[in-house]
Amino acid sequence: MSTRPIARFFVSVVLALVVLLSLSPPSRAASDAQPRYLDDKFIISIGGFLTDFKTDASVGAGGVFGTSLRLEDELGVDSDQSVFRTDGLYRFNERHSLGFGYWSLNRDGLTEIDETIEFDGNVYELGAEIATVFDTDWVRVDWRYSLVRSERGEAGFSAGLSIYDFQVGLAGEATLGGGGTEFIRAEEELLAPVPTIGLFIHYAIKPKLLLHFEAEYLDLELGDLEGTVTDTSVSIEWYFTEHFGAGIGSSTTDIEVTDAGDDPFSVDYRQSGLNWYLIFAF
Image (cartoon, rainbow, N blue to C red; front, top):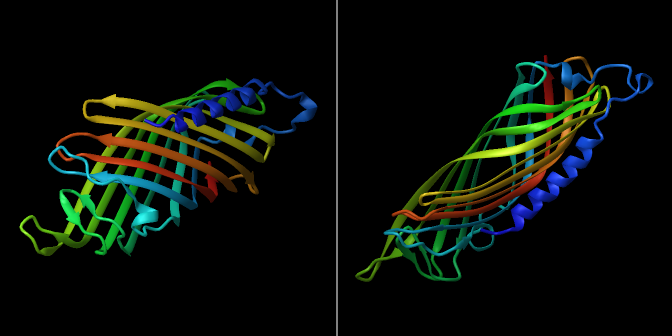
């Protein structure tokens, strides 16, 4: 596994701890109202996510990995896309809350390959025209514990489950074992339910102007499945009424997952970009 996501995660942890230590209560003169976020029991955000991708994938058969493919560079798969995204939070009490999130994206590409590749046991020769699809669905649920609370904000830890569903497919003229070619469409799916741990900080610059920082990480080996997930995000929100607001932020996700079973599948996936959203809080 690459150490790049691990290093990025621990840098995020250090920065988060610095902010956490600054969460001392302000003087009475410094704050004339409780920050909106700390009073709300239910919060949901709905918006868009403009993101860039870098994806390497390998799909094999019979226990043998296929060619490692750079989907955006070699197969013409979309390298950027706007995606619908929703996130939310339900607060049970001052210390405990439940977070959730969802997004889904579908990317495709069509290109004439400049090398012979093997995918799912099929061989596509140099010069073949290949259509590629790469779909990703993500669902997150996590429990959050607010370790530090003040008049200005809160900071704590999270533990939960992120489910990644990767589907990749190639279609084109494949070379047959006895000679000749045949149009073959091959698809494989990798469902990766990944437990994660993380930390969060919500800080009120002003009662209606909030800064959020979150980071999650996991490095797991379980049987044939091995994976590393790192997710970091920072955003700023403005509540323009008691129950409604808007936000803008930036996030980066690194995922490296390998299933070395009978039908081996590996994905090295990175997405980063800007998101904007509306907030409904009650």
